[in-house]
Each structure stands twice: as structure tokens, then as C-alpha cells.
Image (cartoon, rainbow, N blue to C red; front, side):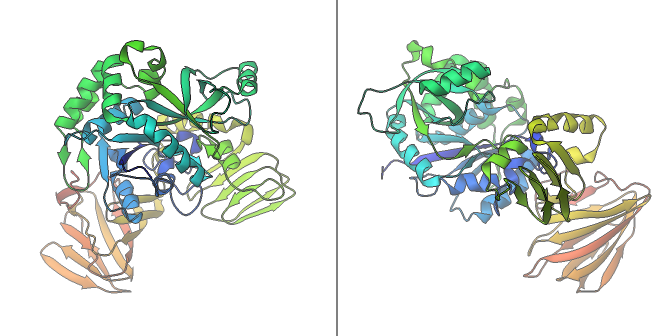
Length: 484
């Protein structure tokens, strides 16, 4: 195995609206367990194990910082860096801040830039492909990974390669000639038949200095803004917070458009471009029909998850997250049930889900942004019921965690402990509550909830008042750096 260290750069800032209602604006698809017990982000880092890795860099939107950090902790990594984008600026600025951060101590590591939300079935073959391309990247090349196409797909961009001479080892790196836009059906058929074109996976490997040289040449304004954002970043231990003003000044652009599509023709840069073929069961999990293709199916070609009962149904994707879902006589449909929303659509039209999300956002509906179950740095809460002047939540606080010292102007709260032990600050009092005990927090009184025990604390909270929005919180102290 090569001795060099490879630094993964996991790009985890997207929102994934085409996988609504499971993926939401503030809890997107890369943080969801769409393919098993772990999230797509966790799967991405898992499949890199066994490679000669340095400390992973995860670039994420600051909206997802707490749940992203928790998922990284669950992996048991020795170390990791979580770079927080104060605003979305697409993948080119994301890779640029990661490269600048990676060279801050004078190093020049090879970066393996990968989206956080893709699926790869054959993990061993993927690792071998990375190792085949690593010497090329160490020597200054930009290495891309091209998916060997199994159909004439019009929804992906393509990479055109120069096929090597007879005797070239299968899967060996080849010269990259050009990136091609999404083709029409006839052109896609020609690409597949010719054997020189691959789907663009969006996975790249190159030295940090090579990326900075390329982005500085093609998009110097991105490099300048990102350099200021990294220079002004604040490291608070759990997160590296990029300078918000500087990062916001960066143009928004993708890795492909900003650099990669221009690079093969830029002879003045003298940066070799290579492509390593991948036949690894890849999917970008871009929409529900793609998820159906990526996961195992039964003898009737149905892919199911959860409490699902089917009768005379074929070729469907059915997900039940909260209750029983039964389908009769369904063909090639997608049915996705969550605690607060249900999607039903023909599999052929799942790309249109983003239209529903846009309409929900325009109408101010919370279902576009959040699930009923909302993750917080201390645990999570589930909005069980609500009505005029009341709201009921199930709140789970992790062992040792503590909520902010806060006050509400418009609501009072009743807490009932159903599991664990609660330490409650209520005005000048501090009280301990066990199972089946309760307390009342009057409107306008400072209060705090913490879990001093070794098991999760679970309480039922009943709110009552004239306004019950989450923004009716005045914070006086907070362990997680949140503001009012």
C-alpha cells in the first residue's frame, strides 16, 4: 500500500429536494439512512476505510452542523475537520476552502473529493480504483473517476477518454480528453457503444496545490474570497467556522463548470488529466427512481422499507417510516410515508418532486424545511400534536447534555419525565425529577433542562400560550454557541 496520506474531502452541503419528504432543507438526504442503518454521509466515509487516509475534511452547511458532527462521532473516527459554510456557494468554493485548509501547515496532500450523498455497491473495487489513480495524483495529475455506463443515460454528464493501446491493464488510468454535457438519447447511445465515454461521477483526486493552481487560473475571484474566508475562520474545537462575509463574496459555481470542463484544453497550465474507470454499482441517489435502482428488490421488482404490505404490485418503491402502508395493484409507483407527509408519484416523474417543494416553500409550509422530529445538539424533539394555543412534544436529551438557559415571552411549559432523571433550573430553584414526576415553567421564568444521568432523558412537554413558535426563545447561556 502507498505510504502517502490521502485526505478525503467530503462535500456535504446540498439539500437534495428531489428526495422529499425524507430529505428536507434542514435535514437533507446525505444525513438520512436511505440505504440501511447509517446515513449516506456515514457510508461515504466507511467505504474509504482501508485506504492510506489522513484526517477527513467534511464541508457542510452550518445549518446541519450538530447532526453532522454527531454522525461523525458515531463513526468512531480518530479525528476529523468539519468546515462550516455560512451560505451555500456550490462545490467549487467548497473544495477551495478545503484545499486552503489542508495546506495551512505547509503540507500538500492528495485530496480525494467526493460527494457525501452517492452510493457505491462494490466497495472493494472502489478502493482498488482509488489506489490505481493515487500515483497519478501524487505526480501532479488531476484524476477523475468515470462510471462505466450500463445504459444510454441522458441525465448524466460524460467524460471522454483516449483508450489506451492493446495490453493496457483493465481499469488503468487513461488520458481524459473532454467533459461532455448531458446528451440526447441518440448521442448517449453512441457514447455507450463507442466505449470511450464514462458517466461523470463527480469524484476527483488531486494535490491541494494543483486544485488551487487551477481555480486561481480559471476563477481567481473564487480563490480570493475563499482565501479570506479561511484566513478569517474561527476554530472552536468542534467546528471550523469560515468568515461569513468573505465566503458570501465568492461566486457560486460547481467544480465541473469552474475548472474541470476547461482543464483538458488548458495546455498553459501543464496539468495532466486522467480518468480511472469505475464499475462499482454506482448511483448518485438523485431521485426516488435512482434509489429504487440502487437497492435490493424482491421477485416482483418491489423495493420496500418499513411496515409495507403489497398485493398484486410490481416495480414499486414503497417506504413506510411511521405507520403501515398497503398497496394494491400498483405498478411502477413511488410511495413514501413519513410522520408528517406522504408522497405518491409514478416512478417516471419523481424528478418533478422539487416542484412540490418549491410550492411548499412559497406557501411557508414547515414541511419543506423540517421533519416532525427535529435534531438538536443536545438530542432531539418530536412534535406530537398541536392546536390553537397548545403544542405537545416528546423531548429526548442525551446523557450529560444540557439545554440553554432560556425564557419565553408568550408560552408556559409543563414537563413530565417518562424515562431517566432531569435536573431542572426554574428561576432560582434547581430540582431533580425522576420518572412519573413533573414540573411547571411559568411564562417569563428563566429555565434550563439537563440530563445528569447515564441513559437518555425522555420527557413530554406541553406548551400553552398565545404564540408557540421556536423563535420565542431568549437565550442567556448556551453550551453550543447558539444565539437568541
